[in-house]
Image (cartoon, rainbow, N blue to C red):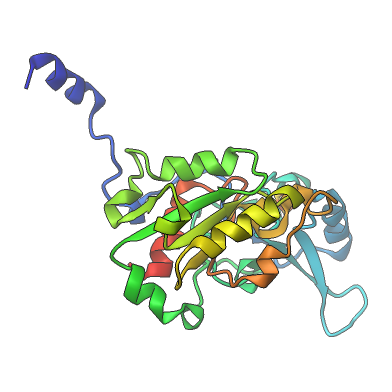
Length: 260
Ligand code: SF4
């Protein structure tokens, strides 16, 4: 090999991440939140007011007035950190990027909890692991996305993250895919196109919602321009939180779904 190319290789060093399961992101990364058990009702009400997507909420405990438990719904959270700025002693965001869940309930982080988010194994369809464990081809559909989640999904296949090493790749046609990954809040204009793309994937197929917009509508959830019945009509196999989701969040979620 010519000397010039060898020098380039030496200067660049190793480009890929050798073990994606062991990556530790810097502390500035906004990952899984932790809510202190001692958040007062007045503080919770203040944060609820601040939260732009309604991701921060409270549940009444035993119907007792003023006795409420706080939670953050990762399916709606855009990780703006307004809640943590308001209550820095009581709300923090860890650098844990393993946020994917296979139920909507699994995306709820409750007050006083500080444990990793994991998939509900009993809800994973058997055929997903028997058919797609060795290779999984996905078609990504941007349903009114803003190109942020789409860029991060692209990055999942780049030389750094290289999810292709696990046989996971995006393909051009839904007819060549095993499943659909949806990004964006699903506008009226994209609703039919999305359903057509999903129907074009041969069965059995998987459905992944990537990013707060796709999971809940995100900051657009009250917009009249959305038509989100797609997510009610079709069974969702995996929810990947984030705004946009980090490539590692996506890759870990898919690997967990496949049992790799
Ligand atoms: S970080 Fe999430 S929960 Fe906190 S204010 Fe922003 S959207 Fe709401």
